Amino acid sequence: MNLVDVNTLFSTEDKCRELLVRLRFPEGPRCLRCNMPVVELETEKQLFYCKDCDYQFSITAGTVFNDSHLPLTKWFMATLLLCEAKKGMSACQIQRTLGIGSYKTAWYLCHRIRHAMAQTDKPMMDGKVEMDTTYVGGVNRGKGISARVENKEVVLGIRKRNGDLRFFHTKDAKSGTMAQYIRENISEDVEIMFTDDFYANTVAMKKAGINNHKTIIHSKGQYVNGDIHTNTVESAFSLLKRGIMGTWHRLSAKHLAAYLEEMEFRFNRRNRSDLFLDTLRHMVTASALTFEKLTA
Ligand SMILES: [Zn+2]
Image (cartoon, rainbow, N blue to C red):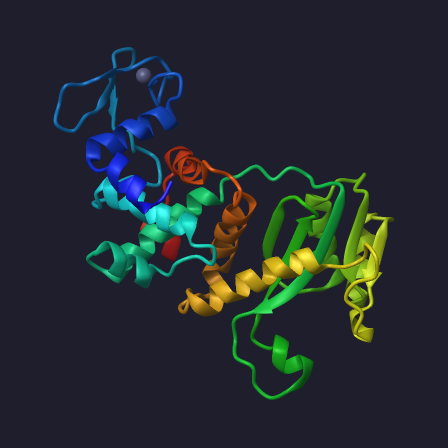
C-alpha cells in the first residue's frame, strides 16, 4: 500500500469508515456494551444501535479516533506516512504534508497512532538473543564517557537474531534494572544471550538466572568473534538514532517510550505487506488517548 493506493481506495469518509468497520468487527458489528449484534441507523452520523440495551455508538467510539475533528481521510494518510517512513516522521512534517491546521493537532494525531502501535503482544523471546544499551538525547559537553552519558536517556535494546526487536526507555543501565527487563522478556530456556563486555551485563545475566551468556570484547576493539556479536541490535540502534536526529527534533524524555514503541512496531513489521491495515486494526481496537492524559 502506498500513498496513491490510500488516496484511491480511501478517498471518502464512507470508504474509510467501511474499512474500520471490517477491521473492528470482522464478524459483524456488535454492541460495545452488551456484545449483542447491532444495526446501523440510517442517519447522517452513521451510528450503530443496540436494541438489547438501547445504546448508540459510532465506529470510532472509544478508539484512538475518539472525538477527533480531523477527517478519516487525513487519519488514513497520516497512518500510511508513519508506517512507511523507516525513521519515523515528525509532527511538523505531517502537519505540512497533510495541511493540518495546527502543530498541536498534528502532534496529538501522531501520538494517538503511536499509542495504538504500543498495544502489541510481547511474548517471551527465545533462540539467539542480543542485548545492548545506548544513550539518546542531551548534548555532548566535553569529552570522554561522562560527556556521552550525562543528561541522556538510556535505551535498552533486545533483539532476537532473525526475529523481533524490543526497545525500552530505562531509568539507568545498572545490572538490577537490566535483570528486570531480562526476566520480563527473555524465556528461561533461551538458547544464548549475546552482549558486549560491559560489566553490568554479566551481573545482570547472573541476577536474571541466564547461564548461556557470551560477550564480545568491545573494550579491546573486538566486534565480531564467530557467532558472538551484537551487530543486529546495534543496527536497530543506528536506525533509532537517525530517526531521533533527523525527524524528532522536539523529542522529550517524557515521550521517548512512545517513540520507541513506534520504532519497534514498524521494525518488527518491516517485511509485512499488510503493515498499513495492521496499524489501522490496532488503531480501531486500542483504547482512546485523551489530550489531558497525553500531556499530564
Ligand atoms: Zn447492547
